[in-house]
Image (cartoon, rainbow, N blue to C red; front, side, top):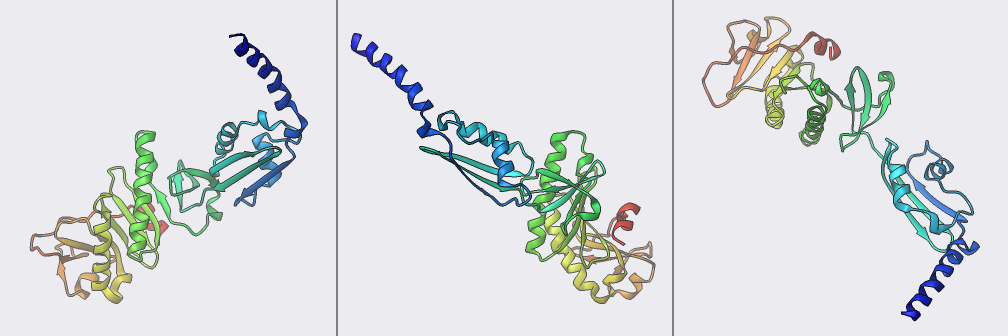
Amino acid sequence: MATTGGALAAWSHLVPYITGNDYFRLRSIRISSDETRVTPQTLAEVAGLYDDESLWDIDPKAIRDTLREASWVHEANVARHFPWQVSLSVSKRHAVAAAIASGKSYLVDEDAVLFREVDQTSVPDLPYLTGWDSAPSHAEAAGRLRSLLGLLPEAARRKIEVSELHMDEDGSVWLYAVGVRASVRLGSVEKAPIGMDRLSIALKELGNLSERARLIDTDYRDRIVIRGADDKLPAMLAAETETGGTAAAFPLHSSHPASPVAKATDEKAARHG
């Protein structure tokens, strides 16, 4: 017991000597970051790293947590390299879309994190995600945003260049695609990939007349319904015409009559010409 007590007493004197020894003072900080707008010096200051600080007093986990509080930081790694060096590695979030929330534009990454507010006149050439923030709760709004994000790869696989994906309050998804003048109603998130496939069918059937289409509704069990800018489109299509005189339907393996078509809102139509 006496021997153990003596060892503890010796250690209690040794620890302050080691941690306070100048040999373990911070002399070098290696910083790697792909965010060019934030200088290495600023990152070091945010991390709370200063010359001559003892490496024993530096807490890598606490520094990581501090760095990750910055909205633009996707990942941060911190390591001590005894006796006198610390390394920081920081990666930024990369925007895959622009999301509209409460009338403001934000860049959003693949994890559905809104990480930077941007002026609508300076938003990069990215697809817009809109309507999702009308959900009654924050959790539901976040879920809707993730759902819209999940449709972007589906569109890319079908070579559809998305200008905007909009979600109505009832969960219906609208697609606005580059090179397609019509508003495209895809239906629910689950049905949206099928709706994209049907859009390709509609555009093929329309051919050069696609410029006259103003609404393509793919959310029917047995057909694609198309509404034109005027009543001339049905007469110009070799397809079944609705009684309204302004829409046409391409049957999909069924002869059941088509239901009335939902119209795009004036706001969406104005935004996409």
